[in-house]
Image 1 (spheres, rainbow, N blue to C red):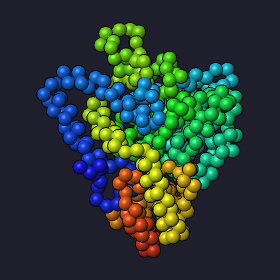
Image 2: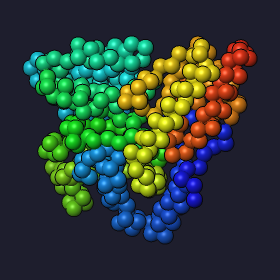
Image 3: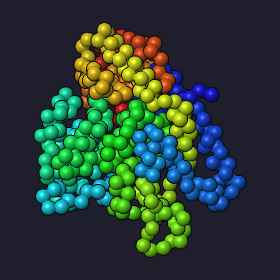
Image 4: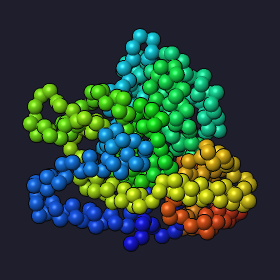
Length: 389
Ligand SMILES: *Cc1c(COP(=O)(O)O)cnc(C)c1O
């Protein structure tokens, strides 16, 4: 069976929605059969489904199994973590985040700052990149939390998780990470790097499907923290159905779950994790870097008028490559007509994401030549543009 089933054409948008794992349909079908034949009794097997995925999740982010759980969405998990760990005290009230961070993160961070009287300090981006001195300039003793993306969703810049976590700790702040654009594309070491907490989604490089349950990491050093947004699904499994008050939270990160999870979505995640279990993440990363390096070479050769936004240094690069061109939106639509599926970030960025285990080098050359050909034709007048990027 193929690892992944891709739509026709050259698929370069796996960092928005990863392709469907080959075994996913059978996995879902098995849960539908279970539901049909057992009804509510099927909960006997579903009850700990999220927890059963934790060893695999832990491998993806370099954690212990009890430090991770599949639950919620990035946005909901970030709120849950802020409600738990953002506890301003005295002068230490501010949160530092990247101005070019994914907007949903900024909505959550600024709402919590407003609620609890802190200031959201935004690290400015220069040409969609974060520079060290700009991060440093925001860090001092009044910072309660440094919140950063492992990979910037627009430029694809990769940040050093261990280093910035240590810098945050040096000023007495917590360090939290949004790993949406790196989980499944490269190895992580959240536990060893002393990351306080992190969130990520599973519908990008992990390819667990649209709206897949997200991931949440809380380091063991915070194992005693009580969830700030508790719900009964975060109970200790052995006593959950005692329905007692107050709640007895689960021992690990499972306590950050809130309500009944989507079993079908968890089954899809299990199918996606099975694919990744067969490969070494270091190899995924090596393949990803080979593909993005080739893409950058092709861009240099064929697309001199497009500005490359992504760092050339492999150590500073995640899994995608971003170009700037004033006609990016129309270009994106035209490429789809040509059978090349990129992703547009308005107003003028075109993201190209090879899927590390699937994309062929020859596809990248065909994609870049398709861009070349559209740039040469320069037919930019389009009345209707789709709302979905
Ligand atoms: C994709 C993405 C999100 C999406 O958040 P959801 O709440 O899961 O929809 C958040 N942050 C970043 C950095 C992303 O790339």
